[in-house]
Image (cartoon, rainbow, N blue to C red; front, side, top):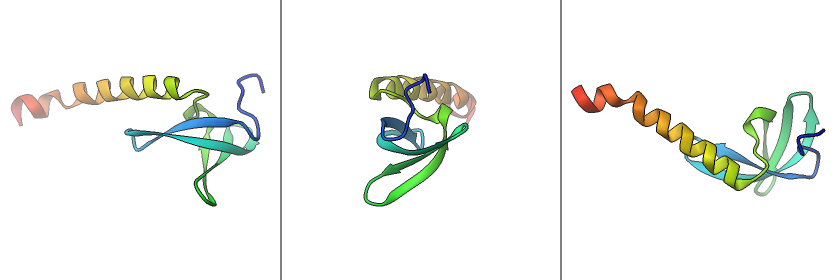
Length: 79
């Protein structure tokens, strides 16, 4: 895998569009990865939701928050 997402590597995910969490990749199957975090906890997530660095995850989160702020303009203005 040329993108650095391989078994045993550490990556970062964004939880609920608010927090960045470090995970460890346990299994890769096509476009899905099984990742573990905490004590015995894990989820299956698409490769496009994983980030190689905390900085890139935080930059993506800032973009998402900016789009959400613009999406609620009508409610702030006329609500």
